[in-house]
Image (cartoon, rainbow, N blue to C red; front, side, top):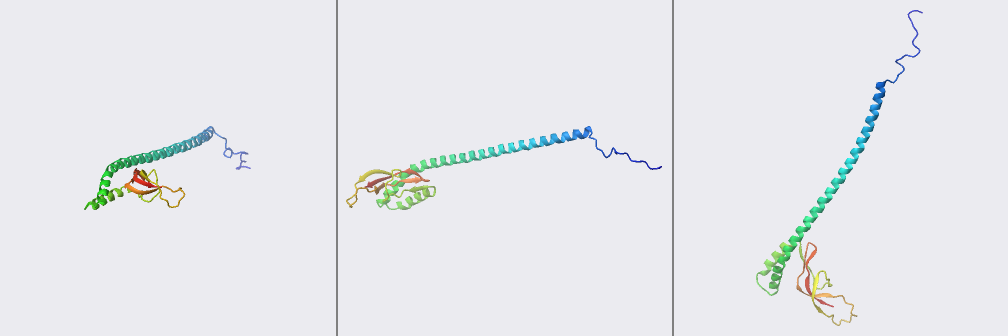
Length: 177
């Protein structure tokens, strides 16, 4: 049998003998996977820190805005409180029939109302010490009641006001009951 030769029982190309470069490559790939996993974990931790920091900043910003708004309301409330004697004078002048005072009083009260001033509607309502200052007390009449009558505001001597929901000045009232 000439011309033909028998193949090797094991062709060296068929058997992959791990070389040192293959081992190094596998080790490098494993190290890259570990490094990648560590980087992903670190990235997630940093992202969590950043999100918490952003939330803390938003909370701080909102609290600062609220404090500034509250301070502005207090300051303007003090200014409006200084104007209450002017409203009282207009109200008394109107009650005594002074001509020409009603448009001025209405304009001033209207301007202040647009910004948060509200007069307390006190006549005929139950006495509330947070909104009313009782300067006179009138005993309840003999209406046949058993004495368990809730005190009612029977006369308003000076109008009370609220500023943006907070009592600026209580109404000066007479209480019946």
